[in-house]
Length: 237
Ligand SMILES: [Ca+2]
Image (cartoon, rainbow, N blue to C red; front, side):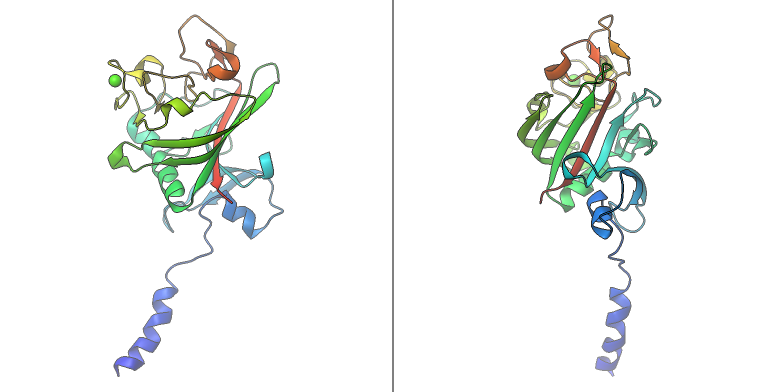
C-alpha cells in the first residue's frame, strides 16, 4: 500500500513548481531569441514574485536585466529604505527594481554588470564589471564588484565595493555624516561617492549644489548630471 501511494504522490509534488517561469531577461531571451528590448515580466524570487522589468536585448549581445534606469527625470529617486528594498518607478521608463530582487538574482546566478550612460550632447559610454553581487538585507545589501572593462566611462564604482547600501533613513556609509541625505539619493556610499546614479535629475552641467546630480565623475567630472544612465545584469556565460 505504501508503494502504491508513493507512486501517485511523486508526480503531484513535482508539478507544483513551474520551471518555465523566467527568472530574468536571460531566461526571456533563451525562450525566444527573436524577442526585442522592452518590458517583460520576470520572477526573481519564485512564482509569487512577478515584477515588470526592462530587458536590454541589444547592448553587447543583450540578455541584460535592467535594475536601475534614469532617462528623463520623471521619477523621484529620493526615497526611504523600504522603497529601495522593494523597488519603485515604471519599467517602461525610470525605475529601481529593488534590492531584494537584485539580491536574489545575483545569488541565483553568477552575474556581470553593465552601466551605460549618455550626456546631453548625445555622447555615449559604458563600463562593465565581470563580477557583481549584492548580499542579503541582514548584511545591509552589501555590494561586491570586481573586474572592470572600460567602455569610455571609466571606473567610478570599484572603490565602493564592500560597502552597504544607504538611504536617508538608513545610514550605512563610512562618513561621519549622512551621504544619502547630503547627496539626495539612495546608493552604496563610502565617504561618499564618485558616482551618484540615483541622484537628482539636473539636466546637465550645474555646479550650484555640490555633487547631488546624476554624476559619473570619471567620465563627466563633478557638477555634470547625465541625461541617461542604466545599470543592468546578466548571468556570466
Ligand atoms: Ca554616516
